[in-house]
Length: 119
Image 1 (cartoon, rainbow, N blue to C red):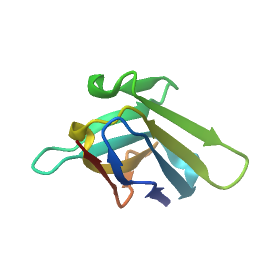
Image 2 (spheres, rainbow, N blue to C red; image 1 turned 135 degrees about the horizontal axis):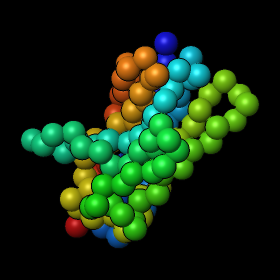
Image 3 (spheres, one colour; image 1 turned 90 degrees about the vertical axis):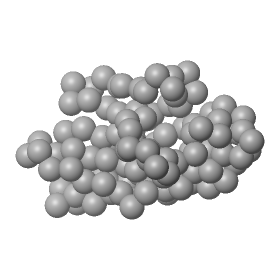
């Protein structure tokens, strides 16, 4: 079993920065992919940035050059991932979710962190 918990959302003015964190714990050896998704009111959940199983990184076109995903894989029991968000825009307002995909095909989602960017 894998558990993912996000933190770091909040309210920021346009042009500002926020950093989201996600800690995956439990059977982290099962994790094959990790990434960030977001869902704005009335819209579908969409990919923001993710590590693929091959170790590459995918970014949504809308965040390229502004957001950076990173990951700490330590010898501890946990696996931590970050999303550094710079030059935030009002259209970045959404609930941001951490996702971990397992080698067995299961999806694990965090509870969501709200990000609000005021104009």
